[in-house]
Length: 88
Image (cartoon, one colour):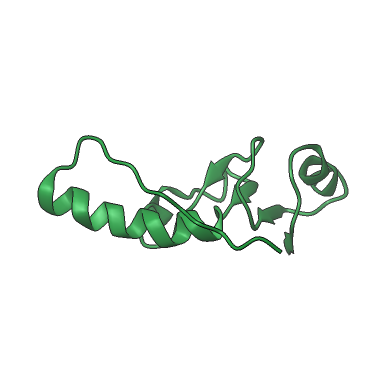
């Protein structure tokens, strides 16, 4: 069973306690077993080890793959990015 939800921390543990096999957190989290960014580190996922998986934030999913390509091409040591979000 795969459970997709916007859960953070202890709430994710509660789902595992009620027999969910995996919890996908669709934002950055503090208590995840692993954060997976598709195209960057999905090969690091081990279903026997990781049951609480964060998929990162929308910003992370846009920026990290781009930085991966830049780093592999130019061996970037440090950098920064400015993110601007709309105010509602």
